[in-house]
Image 1 (cartoon, rainbow, N blue to C red):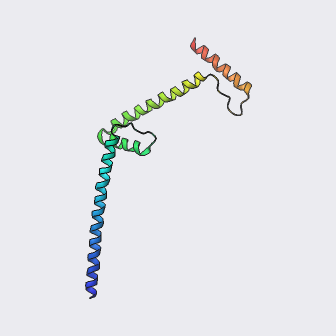
Image 2 (image 1 turned 90 degrees about the vertical axis):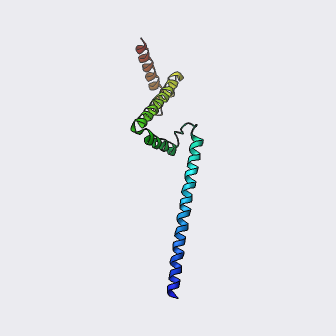
Image 3 (image 1 turned 30 degrees about the horizontal axis):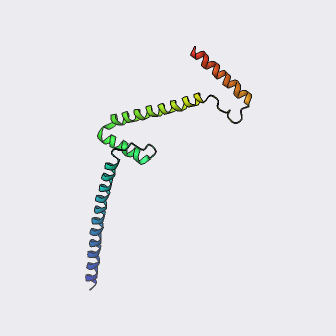
Length: 126
């Protein structure tokens, strides 16, 4: 009788293990389907630079398909975009004309610095 109970317990454990493995395999298949559907949906969309997972995924794809050269091209393109954006911001600030002095600086000192900066710009334009 004890032998019979032990045999049933082992066979139940084996059955449960098989069922667990089948469920895990099904979950993997479902996840792959979802990922492929997401890739199809996101195929025409631009890369979201604020999302770390999107950027990491894109770099992983580039490493698989194009290797280091493709990643280097992508990084160079991103660097150029960042520098262009920074240039636009500084140009906007120059066009604004007057910016308030930073905290802790007197108005007279700020005016002197601004006048010196404008004079330097005029000298450079000549």
